[in-house]
Image (cartoon, rainbow, N blue to C red):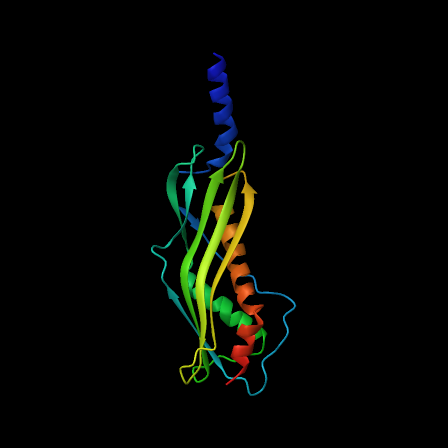
Length: 194
């Protein structure tokens, strides 16, 4: 009888983590631009074109899990993630005074990873979103003055292993990754020079 009470207590403790675990989850991802940005582009700074390629093995951005940590359903994005990433870069470039155009520098972004994972604890769990992307600047003459692999990760505790928490962490990871690029002086310097 005591073992039954323990098992029942555990099930009651982990049920809030499950959400609607057996239906595909959908997220509407968004990018929040950086604040307190300084215009750095000069009048003679080259124009910039952004190109994004998606090299992720599949479009799934996370998995729902049940109270025992087993996968129950995928989480997918309603957004075109490469288009969202391209828009994020273009927004930050514009905020810094760079103009869009194809006759100057090209920022190539190769998205390799963008996913949220849930892990369970006793009465709560964690949501951890990570992103990995290769970012390079290619000049009109083919020179590559900047090339870096950028990773970012965000983590927070959760009570429900569902799409709302996945969306919150994925949005934060995207923002963190873009901020890492634009806070890199080498990236800005490479954009300013012809």
